[in-house]
Image (cartoon, rainbow, N blue to C red; front, side):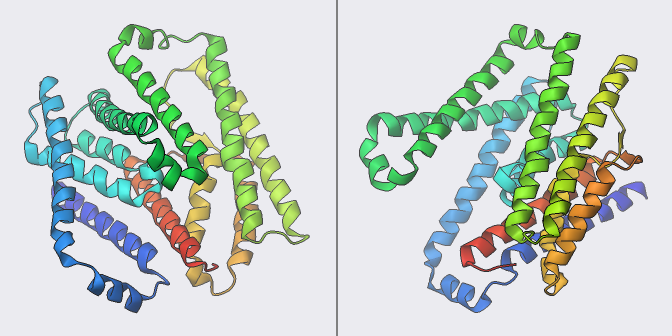
Length: 342
């Protein structure tokens, strides 16, 4: 009975994600023009393209299968193909392909594979991908200057920045995976290092979930005389919430080493879900999007400084939130591409 219930829940979850994806991709688009473009496409390339996708997923699944067996985990090849398919699907529908590996970890956990093992395996897969990108990028830098200056002249600084960041990331990940002695030096942190981590994390949160939403909401239309006080209140409430959290988190870490199960007040990161959620349902607002946007920013700011217990979301709830954010980003890209407004 329990397994049947889980199957129903998983099926409903996948159908909901698929429906949200279809809605985000096709909403507001000219379906007639899309069908015409599909009719003009050369169908001879569809089958090779599909085969390339299947080959890519199969290749990653083989890597995962070999890595699992190197850890003495007897997992089937078709199960590894499922892991790879899940990663491919969620990478396609989430911003910057950020949802693939978290969902792979979730499905591996369901197969009784420990998180440390699955994390190491996926990190090695990621290192492999990044290493390929680095090799291709450095090859273009050394031997393809003509190609770069012909097609990437306007974004060459961004290209070189990307190459540098990828080299740094691959080097750092290689050290962490294959130089455990160095990684272990960061296991037992001093009290000062823990405090520094809390402070630098909060500063990043202020920029990402405090300043950036204010700029985004201003660009979306919160430019009226009554809008500015709401934006200022939101920013101040976020700073107060983070300051209070830092004090309470330091106190909690001194008393216990257990993971936090509840937040005290609404976490500032919740705005990264609230705004995309409003954006997804903007068509239902029927011209009242700006009113709902003002109410949302004001309500979230109030909840930042309200004292209540907020349960941390489960893995399934996080997966739903990631899917919603992915749909919102897809819809935003389509609106930007089409030159339309909300």
